[in-house]
Image (cartoon, rainbow, N blue to C red):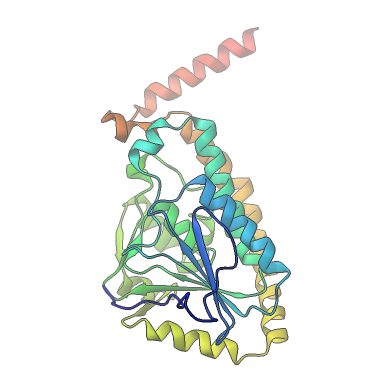
Amino acid sequence: MIQGDLKPSSKTKDGVMLFSFNNLEVKISSETKTLFVFIQPERLNLETLFELEGLTQWLQSHIEVQSVVISNEHALFPLSPSDETLGRWSVDQLKHFQQKLSRVVWAFHKVPQTVIADCKMGTDSFGIELALCADIVLLDYEGEMHFDYLEKGIVPMSGGVSLLAEAVGAHRARRWLLSTSSVSSEELEACGWIQAINDREQIVDILKKINQQSSIARIQLKRQWQEWFSPIHNKIEEVESPFALAAHQSEDYQRPFRQESFANARDVALKMREKSIDSSSH
């Protein structure tokens, strides 16, 4: 794990608190015109996603900010909700969470700043999808990404298929997701998705380079990428969401907390068929 702290000191002019959030600590560095967004909870929750989405609206109108770093004070990038939390959620609550996560990812794609996700030692399923909002994804050399959706009884619907396939290639994405792999920083960097770092000062160097760029050129380049990702976002809505929502009807995502076996796919299919026949006969 890399030692060091990127957070601007609150005792100086840099680092003055800009917002009043419950789950985010937001500070700014005037040296690099960077907005630092520190997610306080160790695990993602709906309130955090609402606050992140609200922050993107502020960023849209503050083009003087050159870069955004999303990070936290924990060893790992924000993790998925716990098995206990998922076990208590209704299907509608899980749907609402994943839809909000999808909107947050797309909202960060549309901001004019360069967005950096400092993933530290790594994260898991929903945390990976949040990291897909970033233009630059950083991971400690000893870090790993855990593609554990299926172990949780969850299907991605916030870019965990479409955006991941775009970032690493469809064959890798399919293999990692279906094998619930833990993938090292070395393999992730080899496919071009992340940049492995061994010193927090490397992040400062990146921010300084961004601050030396033409703001107008960067904003136009970001708009090009927005157009590039637009069809992928449509694919998320048309493909990822329906299949994820269909899978969640089994409530498999609740079973790890209950220490129950996942539903038998054949039994579920037969019940759905019977239900369909009953509906059509009335």
